[in-house]
Structure formats: structure tokens, C-alpha cells
Length: 278
Image (cartoon, rainbow, N blue to C red; front, side):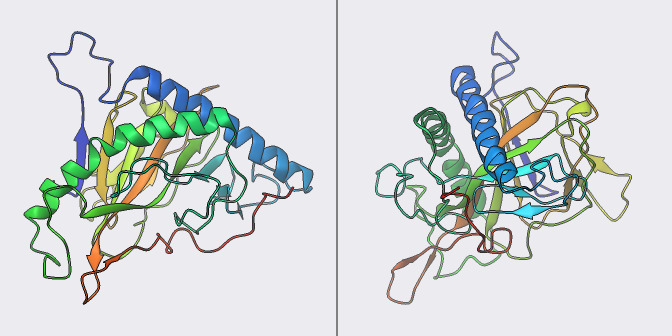
């Protein structure tokens, strides 16, 4: 964790080295869900007379889909968190889920929801336990206002979704996701990564030539501090879209009376218009 980046991969002794921590079936269903969701939202944007690729009209932001980059072809598709919360219940995309900018707007189809539920549950079986181990030895901000329970309830999901990078996309500028401690980004590639597909690169120091580019197989997990300098590279492949699932885990804080506090990632997901009624 020297540079704020941790890769969680399946055991080298696994007979199939291409198998990730999360099952292939779960990952493939999530990838189909991501493609379906993107197509649906881009159709709604097109019906508004806006270029859904973000090339002609530039970046756009809706509650259900964001094109952040000049040149287009790179999308953030926010999702409600449908894993198990601290009470053991499962999320419901028909209610106002306080994830990201708040309510995600247009509901997922049954197929899309099934792919998301299985993936989020699989992530919840792994990631909170790793964060518990990381944060239990972290002196930064470790005070009476932050839980250190061994039941992994000291974190919650502040934002989640899919990041979709199409062929022809440009590399992002170097950036941090935010300035605050207590946030961990979690990436799960839904296809095997290679250098052509525009993987995420991390700057290890002030020298921009000193980069770390984890090339993970699908179903493995990448964790990095919200404040770590990184960028998504351009997708130079001919016809392969790079899709990954993400979640922003936040360290849970307590009010003075011991009540758990939760809030979204308002830095990256401010309020936005919705496509729900298009």
C-alpha cells in the first residue's frame, strides 16, 4: 500500500490463471448489464437531440449517465448499490437510494438489476473485510468518531456504477478523485485488461514517467485511495470496449450520540437532471 494502490487477485495456485476473485458467470452477467444500461441511456439522450457519444456536443451529465471527457467515448454509468447493507437487507432500485447524486433515476431492467445484484453481493463479501484490515492500522483520522468494529460495518458505499471506455477514447488528465481521507475506490474489470484497452494508470511520484499500470484479469479487484493521482488511458483497440464496475467505499463516521452517519460522493456526483421520464 506504499503508493495507495492494492490489487486483490486470485491465488497463483489456481489451475485456471484467468479466473478472478469473482466468478466468471457473475462478471459476464454484469458486463451484459453494463452494455444494456449504456445502450438504453444513450438512446434516451439521442432522443433529446444530443450526441450520445459526447463527440459533437461535448461532455454531459445526467443522473443515469455521465460523459466527463472532451472527445467523448468514455462514460460513467451510476448505479444504486444493490449489495447487502449493514442491516443485512438488499437494496431496491425502486426506492430513493442515496448513492452518488441520490436517486439514480430511470430504473434498471430486470436483466440489468440481476447482473448488478450478484456483482455487488460478491464485492461485499470481499472488500469491506479488506478495508477493515487496512483501516484498523491507519492512524490518520482514527479517533473516537470512527468505528473500528470487526464486523466490517465501518464502511459503506458512497457511489457505484460502471465505467465504460470505448475504442477511440482519449487519455484523461492526471487527477485525484477528491481531497478527503476515508474514501477508497474499488475497480472490478469486467473483461481482461491489456494496454490497448485504456487501463487505469497511477503516478507514483512527481515524475509523470514513473507509472504503475495494473493489468488485471476480469473478476479481480483494484483498490486505491481516493487521493491517489491516476488517469484512465485512451482505448486504442479497434473494436473492444473496456468496462469495469466501481464502488466508492467510505469510512463510516459517528455523530456525537453514536448514530451512524452516511453521505454520498458529492465531489464526483453532484445533483443532475434525470432521463427517467424520457
